[in-house]
Image (tube, rainbow, N blue to C red; front, side, top):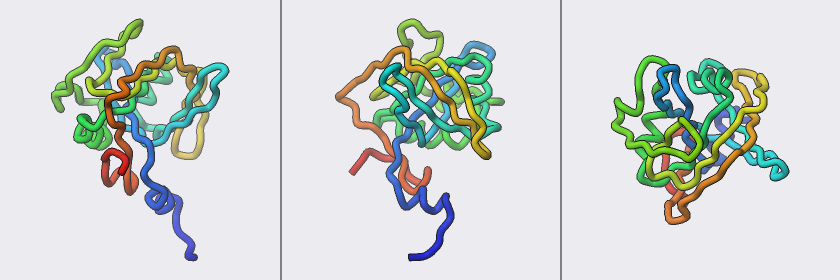
Length: 165
């Protein structure tokens, strides 16, 4: 056995669940950010957590509005997941630039990409500084699913996005 770095370990332990975090920009349009780490924290009450880098524009929006929607993208969104993970929504509208069709979510101003497998409407309760990231701790207000969709996973870090084999 040899010593390796933590980023190398994350590659060796793939696949990892992948999600799109949907937030509301200041102009009331939707922004999307790819996140390959989230976890279920509690079932009473329903809570999840996910981490985003400190300079993340989506994280900034969550800290300001306390609202987000976490989607588990279906395989039709494979290219979109890669694109949204490699650019910031701070200065560009990803939805327009990448021609992402959106759909409304009941009781939310935030829209989501079509072809999502699962969506969780979130209320951010707190965030904690963890090194170069923030851990967002969120109450899950609503959950919706399309069980016919195949979920995407991240392989080799973000090197490859695909369905589970």
